[in-house]
Length: 76
Ligand SMILES: [Zn+2]
Image (cartoon, rainbow, N blue to C red; front, side, top):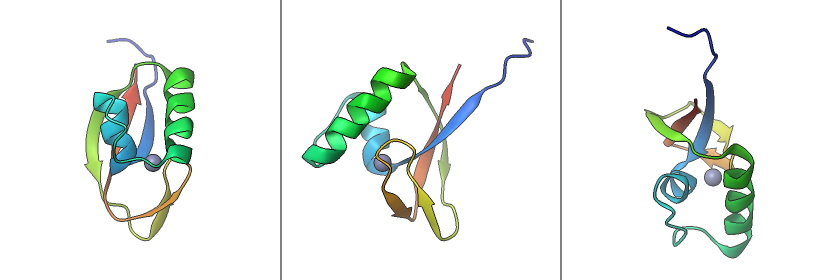
């Protein structure tokens, strides 16, 4: 095993689909630009766990407050 740390990002479901499959259809134009910038910054991310954090949480991809389920992605 390596000792490399794995970074996890919390993404909303719309961003999760965009990052995982390149499907931007669920995003508005402003978010699409954010998502593309996020993907360019972070490279290839792997889908990890479904999450359902309590209360509001911030999608690290589009930067929009979220309420409800999302998904984490990890970066090797
Ligand atoms: Zn998002």
